[in-house]
Length: 266
Image (cartoon, rainbow, N blue to C red; front, top):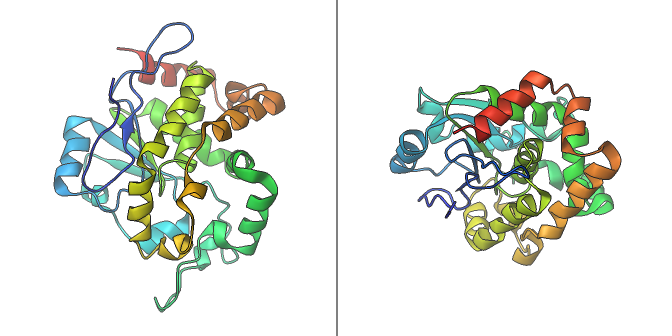
């Protein structure tokens, strides 16, 4: 099935419905949707997501500084939709990215991965290592995002800025937890490359992200399947897989059953 949801105000939106599990079940449509930044959604986009796809909850994976810099998005005004902010970066007060918004609005926004610590960690870890860092640093947010999917009515939309990295990790964990094989998870992750030019253009036009993308090469930001493959392999080696990692971080039998019902039951 064509899983893309084409909207005017977002570039990287797709439904995870249609992916299949190892035991032959299928992820149902309008249960789990992934997206890039939602700030530019039009009124028609909002109604399509809410009325057409049944979106009732949003897991916003952006950092505190991104949320502060961008301000309220269109979905914040929709009564039927509950938004949970679940940053995948450590947010510990005055010394973190939350303090990086220029109070006078005269300088560029300093994003978590632009700080000296963020650049150093990225250089040391590589892309898949950065993804594992999300799990190490904010396991609480990852588990909370999956619980939001599992225990909420309607569709849950998971998003960050580009809809490929942070969103890719949380979506991968949800899919792996219900038994979607790694090859399908990797393939879904890599599909964001089909929209990378549109994603890049949208972020570059935003005052929040423009400085980060100045002089950046689009090829460097293009997702590759090997990155997700390496992350999943590392999860297997270090934790015994996504389900074992979740269990080690408080995921219960009730959570697991609810997630399977939510994503797989017709």
